[in-house]
Image (cartoon, rainbow, N blue to C red; front, side, top):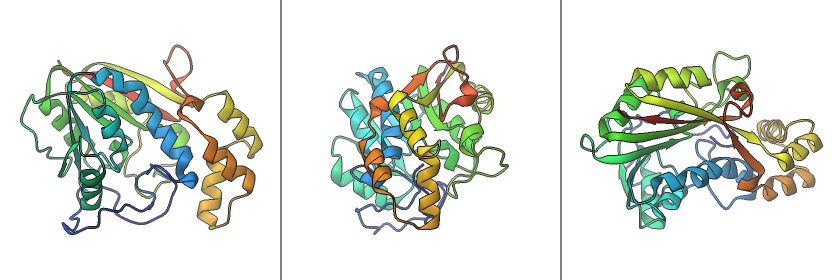
Amino acid sequence: MSAFVPDGAPDGSGDPSPGADAVLTLTGERTIPDLDIENYWFRRHQVVYQRLAPRCAGLEVLEAGCGEGYGADLIAAVARRVVAVDYDAAAVAHVRARYPRVEVTQANLAELPLPEASVDIVVNFQVIEHLWDQPQFVAECARVLRPSGLLMVSTPNRITFSPGRDTPINPFHTRELNAGELTELLLGAGFSEVSVSGLHHGARLREMDARHGGSIIDAQIALAVAGRPWPAELEADVAAVTCDDFDILDTDARDIDDSLDLIAIAVRP
């Protein structure tokens, strides 16, 4: 998920060119680091990697849908091994060139190129909403996980991301989920002990929301869709966002339906 710049394919079943360039550009399909205009979305994704990476310490990890690769590299700092898979040839070439400690492979997420019971953790952050066959993908995650292995998923909360809509606002998304739907999807693939928490704006981001008409998200999207330049104050606020500006809260701390993103951890029996 990123700012909405309509370009590219929304699913993981495309036929990317094997000669694709290793330089990634901002299209709206994935977030990338080191761009002030993209910083809000990047930090919103990065914080989940930061908070959950300790669970990967010393283990073998698959990131299914690695995008630019910054998250797989962050996990590689603590994991014993990180294998990354992405359907896009340009992303794979980029990861291979920029993040040498990540083992990256081009593949369709509906057919993960790993043996059964070969990894301890599967990470899938801000990807499942892009996939056409979500049950098949989740079943593949269960197949490649060892017993008691973890599937860790983050995805936009449909209730707050595309409120009141039957189809996603983001043109790269195929199916967005609420907390109940995500839980049902994971349980349906045989996972157990599914826990779901929510990502929310912290105090400083709530102050930014107030400065920008109630939502710094809506302010960014409205200008991106209209193709208009950003006011200096919005530029400065977006560039200043850090991971510390987000809270990840359990359901007993705040209503999960109010969350911006859902974060699920499921155990393979």
